[in-house]
Image 1 (spheres, one colour):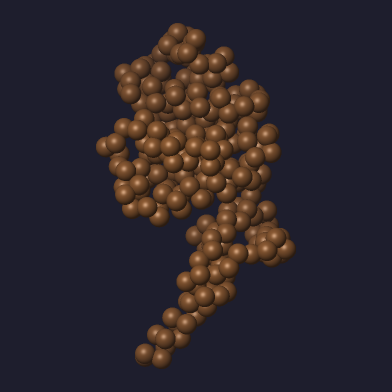
Image 2 (image 1 turned 90 degrees about the horizontal axis):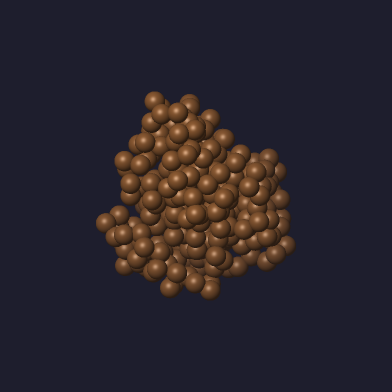
Amino acid sequence: MRGISAKSLDEVLAAVSAAGTGSGDLGVELFDIVATLDREPALRRVLTDPSTEAEAKAGLAEQVFGGKVSADAVTVLRVAVSGRWASGRDLTDGLETAGVTALVAAADSAGQLDDVETELFEVGRFVRSDGELRQVISDRGVPSAPKSELLSGLLGGKVSATTLALASQAATARTGSFERVLTAFGVVAAERRSRLLAEVRVATELGEDEKTRLGAALAKKYGRDVHLNVVVDPSIVGGISVAVGDEVVDGTMSTRLEVARRRLAG
């Protein structure tokens, strides 16, 4: 976000921070508010109307949502609707970001942030590996509730409640595809500790010492801590491939063999 929306988002995130990091309930409630505002565009337009006094919009928001969500959620919402947004969509996008931030903060407070980062990556791989599942989750014509129920049935008990809530929200595909949004949520989690995300592909599982050395080398290269998401892929034969953002360093044996084959073929 830019301009007035970026300033308003900063104020909303400050309100989330002020609410504390006790549990992820605030994040889920903010997602529920987003869903309501997405379903009710007329209400969203009123709450972002620049000609309406901020206090009047805050009062309306409290009237609509008060008693349905916690006091903390109402406080964050009051701050959001009191701000100025370039569009009604920016308001709901900002509230979604606030929900992600609240969930990530709660996971960090509970010492579960590392697990959440890894789980988000694995959930993305899991959905991509099943063509039928990927099609259903990616279909914007399928309502969010059935998608959430499907993910709960498949992932419940296998990932944390935080990861499941984030995956379910990503499945709404409000700002892009499921995979793109899930990746963006992973970035928010990494940035909680000012870290980067690295996808590491190897032929066999790395030992803890190897992970530690690789993490230290990448941290030295990028000047920031790096969270490793390791993918074991026997097809690469040997070596290692590391992707950090758009930068990929491919030192796998399969790639080297393919390059050699192409050279020999002329």
